[in-house]
Image (cartoon, rainbow, N blue to C red; front, side, top):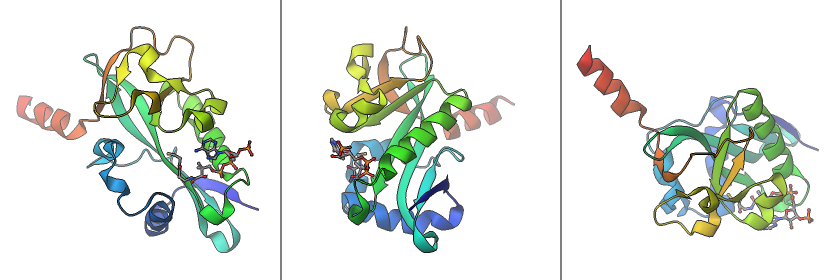
Length: 176
Ligand SMILES: CC(C)(COP(=O)(O)OP(=O)(O)OC[C@H]1O[C@@H](n2cnc3c(N)ncnc32)[C@H](O)[C@@H]1OP(=O)(O)O)[C@@H](O)C(=O)NCCC(=O)NCCS
């Protein structure tokens, strides 16, 4: 039995420990972590699965990114992890489905991630390279995309960029 809720601030240490168990402690060296530095996960879309005694047994997070010179907004899904001893019970599926429903409800239109198409294909993810989207240094077959709205990737191509909220904010301050 598990329940899905939005992530709370106090879940942070349990989530980090779960991610270390699922991916190893070197996980932050992955290229996708470049997109998470100095940026908070999107509140409301970042969910946890809870088991008995409210223990965190699964986590999914989303981050804001932009695509190409036009800086089109997109969500970067990940990391997704389930307590290894509880794999295969539908926790991962429930976290993905619930969070994608919320993303759609929140009018997000494009989602990207780095992962196995064999797993994410069942949720509609397909290689992002067919839209001309690139994450420098990453295996193109592992960068996957999902449109939450028809035509979401029309005229969308280029390099995936981290969200630059700090730079934009300081520019605005200088201009004021
Ligand atoms: C991948 C992961 C999130 C799946 O969570 P889960 O709760 O076990 O998944 P579900 O119970 O919803 O689905 C299980 C199904 O996914 C399949 N599956 C799991 N990982 C897979 C992978 N990497 N590639 C292909 N299929 C995979 C299982 O074989 C199973 O298939 P079945 O339904 O045909 O039996 C979990 O195993 C995990 O945390 N893995 C380590 C971290 C990781 O790789 N995260 C994803 C990359 S960002």
